Image 1 (cartoon, rainbow, N blue to C red):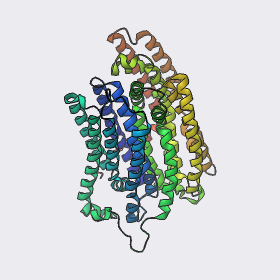
Image 2: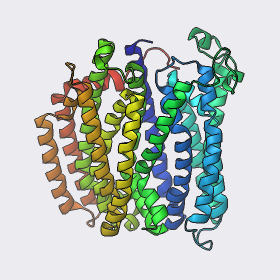
Image 3: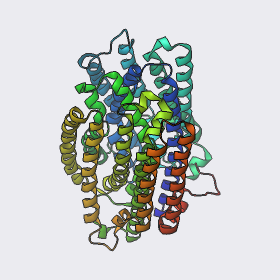
Image 4: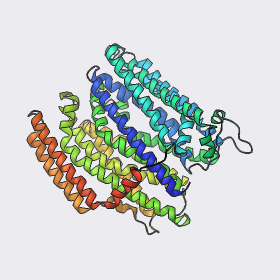
Length: 539
């Protein structure tokens, strides 16, 4: 597969993933708004912070390193060795589940059973759902490596819809079930994921399409662990790379879910406060998650296939390097512009958004300030996603190992900062700590990228320089929307609220027109890569 074909498929994957994440976040958004009217904020805190943290920690530590290692180098692997390696995620998951369940049940504060019953069984069921999801890991990696761009969308869409429907039905008909409702919904979600992947490969393996594309496996039995003739059971080079990524993923998980770990293990907020913070956090991160994360995941696949890990830039194909540099520059410009828009408009519309979404429960107290701070954090989140996406694809094993030390220092500093700043500023301290750590991670990645391209003619970091006219349009919008918030929002009724929304819509239109006029290269990249039009069917 040529570099341009890889870029085309990665762009398609990013587009589908964006649509998928939009649907996920909209459904979750509506589901949270609905359940807030039937269950307590304490229950929301236990589910969205405590139990979700158990699930995300278990699956991340069990599979993330395997995913990054096995997707490096594209499809140029002995796939039977890769399949054998990927099945190690399941016993590893069992070990992590045994450890984490003991911690969640016996070392952490247990909720009051009169207020939040069934905590113990819920911990076991959430751990079981994570193990159930790991059953599909070999199939997921195969699908990603061979660019089955629609499979992930369909599987996760069906799973999410099933989860939401079951949650709504049980919340309305049996609210007294409490944590059993969300445990059952989580099991249904992971069960649907596994089922969709199994059904797809049952139909695909051995088909004419598989033979036409020279797919490396022919039967479902090939997806199970087996001996490899003339070779070791697993690819030890990939295994060593997996170990390097595993050490890194452990630290990255602390950085990614750091505030939840602090809330869970240090008890700086009660369950009710955790529930409010989590709702505000999900609302603030919605755009970041359904736009930036899919772009990061999809273009990591692109960079990992195009770049030769650990090789000097002069020793690689210059055509590939040129495409990679141009894509990196456009991606940086894209996420920077989106991040600036979110920061400017998010600051002025945080109070209104929370008031509409959750009423006084969210719009009073620290809620609006939390969302305003998160709007600024999104800008850093956007830039870091793309820079680390490139860096992780280009680093050699030795550089990955050295970066683990950097991640260790960042993880320790983040935990200390989170505790200190939360003690000083309440829940806002979590966001401030995230901002500081994210800025340090961005600085490290920018220095690496600068060194990587130093001996070449390409300067992809120019993507972080928006046009002066665009900066002026954003500054004017920030002033006008802030004045509008002071005049119209949010206690004067819906007419004044609509006036505030109209001011924001006018400012946003002006910013978008400015982008079209001043950022022609970025607009062309979005039109040709992120919004591709295909005449033929993609599988």
